[in-house]
Each structure stands twice: as C-alpha cells, then as structure tokens.
Figure 1 (spheres, one colour):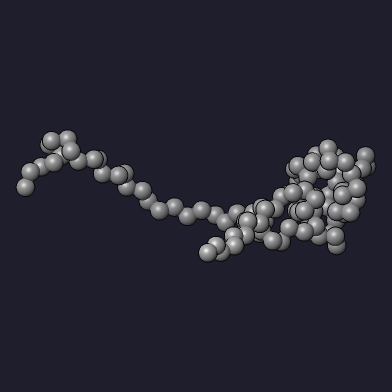
Figure 2 (cartoon, rainbow, N blue to C red):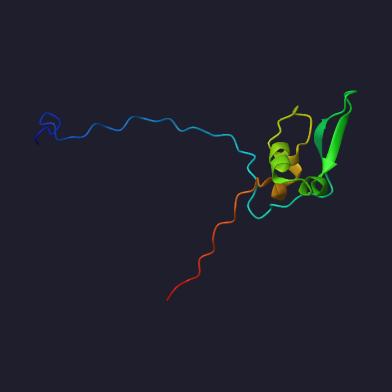
Length: 104
C-alpha cells in the first residue's frame, strides 16, 4: 500500500463535532394562526401605573403603523403581549407550506 497522505492526495479528516441539543423554540405552529378573541393583551400603563389591556378586535381596527408598533412591543415578562394573542393580526405565524398536486 502506498501512503496517499504523503503524496498529498488525501483530504484532511473532517473535524470531530460533538452533538448538541438545542432548546425547543416557541415558534407558532403553522395552521394555528388565529387571533384569540377571548384574551386581552397588555397595551401600556396609565399615568398612575395601572396596566391597560386591549383585545385583538381593538387592534384590528388600528392602522398598519399602529398594529406593527404594538405587535413589536417588548414588555415585562409577566405581561401577555399582542403578538402572543393576536397571531393573525400581528402576522407572527409561519405561512402554510404550498400544497403540491401529483402530476402524471
């Protein structure tokens, strides 16, 4: 046997990679992209510090700039946000994959 490595013919061995475990994500499930009209989300605090909550119907009546701003809100983790309850209005769901018809 001839040593191919000495002749420079062998490609280097791929690096060894330890398997990793990724945490599950909270990505919305395709097909379940609906507003929860029974739930309210945190909108903002009143001047006295009392939180104000709104529903998806209220949000749907707003213009696109307002909807985008409210859907992008980040608030304290103990608050439910619009993007958590108004999935369709906020557009946070993945689109359904296209259906493919069999061809002959």
